[in-house]
Length: 385
Ligand SMILES: Cc1ncc(COP(=O)(O)O)c(C=O)c1O
Image (cartoon, rainbow, N blue to C red; front, side):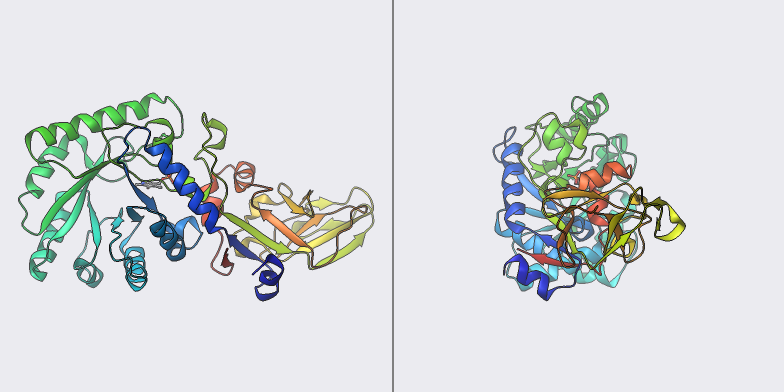
């Protein structure tokens, strides 16, 4: 289906997800990760609906192009993904859930016999998982989550050794991995990240020398892969780079040729001619400086196009950028398209994508590209090419 057919069959506003680009990004990221360790495994992070790109289809594509693992944020996502992968005969790709189990739930019991691996950040949740496993007469595979400095979740580094010692004696659990997470890996050479890396490595080595060996040791997200690659670790967990962005566009030292996977498209639905001095949209925050045409596009904060972009963002139409005009509404934005260019109703609009990357919108609203794509709401259809 070409773009014209897509536009006919879909609602005016849709997110185009280019799976070819996803595949290329995956291969580029893996190639880079392999610089430090040729056998490194990749756990592709597909949490939060694959950063807004659609978890199941994205995960399937990544599985087919060689990801070793898929990473989710919680057990609801995990269950959905596991069911989908199994229905696509991808039972062999494990799903590592980065979220935590703190209560007994039916979901947990359902996941117990499946190819799912659990994160453990404390002894209580280990005991809970162990009880569940013993009750079901199953063994659960777990990764120890160690907090080396993000201070979010995970065993404090000083408690990891003792935690592993206790967990390794629990009959229902099999420890497969140990991992940590960086707080500032997007900054090349950052001293805090170096310290996290060293401290986590020291603790892990000590456990490996005295207690048990881990099949998997991992710390790197995209920033880690780009800036703190270390061959001691044998798995990496990239997220944002798979979708075509660097974690911080301004701090990239080395580009690896990734490109945005998502393009948010819409079309011009209405054009009006206005005299100088007319206000546009709610709150009258934009006034025409001269006689001009204002185009209306059916996308707004209801689709995840932030209201904070009002009078700041641009749209890309027929090879050119035009400024948005006035406050972003729930279902509409307006743009000042001037008088000269040949722009008509139904012309295609790129709200972000290759010609106007999502990180530009992120910069305008003091956020990161992650939030721009994650926020694209469920009413926006995802179309895969
Ligand atoms: C624990 C963990 N690992 C890996 C990632 C992937 O990070 P990135 O998208 O920066 O590559 C995340 C993302 O937030 C995460 O929370």
